[in-house]
Amino acid sequence: MTTGEIAVKLYFEQELPFVIYSKPNATKMIAVLQKNSNIYKPSQAASGFVFAPFKGEASILISEKHAEVFVETIDFLQNPKPFTPNASFSEMDKSSFEAMVTAAVTAIHSNALEKVVLSRKELVKTKEIQPYELFKRLKSTYPDAFCYVWYHPKVGCWAGATPERFLKKSKQTIETVSLAGTQLFHENTVVNWSDKEIEEQQIVTSYIQSGLQNYCSEVHISETYTQKAGNLLHLKSDIKGELLSDADFIKVIQKLHPTPAVCGVPKDKALEFIDKSEGYDRTFYTGYLGEWLKDFENEVPNSSDLFVNLRCMKMEKNEAELFMGCGITKDSSPENEFWETVNKSQTMKRILAD
Image (tube, rainbow, N blue to C red):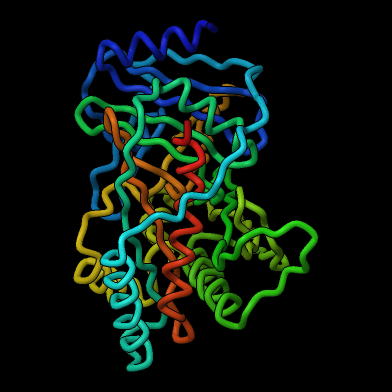
């Protein structure tokens, strides 16, 4: 066991907050372990690791000021075990989700909405997995994702492997992505995207571009391309901007979050529809998380790297809550959208499999 692994085990046993994480394709594991159980808030003056909800102001900072930090080389990667997809679900879950999608499509056709992202959750029985072992499974299975295990005794334990960067800030340069559209990856198959998926991704791109205009001197958007994330494919564009000298990074976050990739357009109408329809509180699912005002590996201050909390789960002792969503536009098929959530559930089910 490494020093970091021993420390994570000790903090978990003592019910103290921590996060273990690794960036996409990185060779380093970083652990930020807080020495008390206080809940701190992110600010322009406090660095650490932020964990923010889908909506509201209840963001939590694992504070660097009150923490010890370990940066260690990853030497545990192994080939993931064979996995047979587990497509189990209840017919009630399927019918209620499809009814929700149908209602959303109707609202879009009546011009009440342009796009909305709808989600569901699924409870999966599992054996208890220690945090560091859980992190090893995530990183070994999804090395090109942002993998993490986050714990706070007053909130709970979350884990995930997200393919989507929310915002990266280095000096005055910010980077983000427009990610939308989903299909299963099949070896040696030509990838074709439907008009619905192309439109869905373009809505996200336009929203981000518009949101950045008042804070950036210039915004550059790449050509759209296909990105593989686990067993799924997505449409993606890279977006980069130069912040104005007086731009407030926190206001940029507030302007963009939640983006149409996890919420919808118009934002207020989409939030209202989600609250009315989903039947549960997303809490930290589709929020964001990551380094806040500190690049821990390179020890660079005032650098932030935030990711959208997708392909994630909330861990309990012998069960896990999985969260899956999909973007609804005027051309959405309720049954196809449900099967998209089933496909997305496999990302975490693979991690929980014996």
